[in-house]
Amino acid sequence: MGNRKLPFGYKMELGEIVVLPTEAGVVHFVFQQYVHGISCAGKTARQLTNADYDRFDLLIGMDQENLRNMYRICGGDYADKMHLLAEYAGRRGDIPDPWYTRDFHATWQAVENGCKGLMERLRNKTDGDEQAKNLYRH
Image (tube, rainbow, N blue to C red; front, side, top):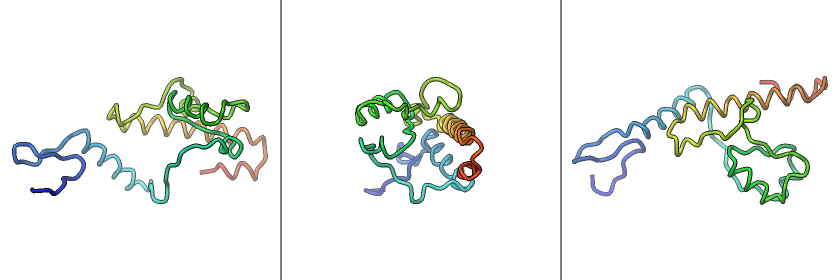
């Protein structure tokens, strides 16, 4: 094969291409999300800044390490804007990191439950303001 690279989820073993089940599972999972209409197109990550604290109403982290870094960057949380996503799913703790757990399905479920809970909280927080409630409809 020379210098050619193998696709994610495969490796060379004794001259044969072998499937790496965990990594192949990641590829399958991402493909399934794409098939179901969930796209990452146009989405990018960026570093949180101190100015974001005043700019946004909520700052959501996935785990305790995220939260500690958010406190450090923003100089604390005097207005109770920083939360863990799992809080909105009615549970304590972190969203599992699939890079380490290799369980992308469990992470997907935890994120989905957290997002659903967050949406419900936002809908309820609008206190009858129909224009605001329409912002949070699916």
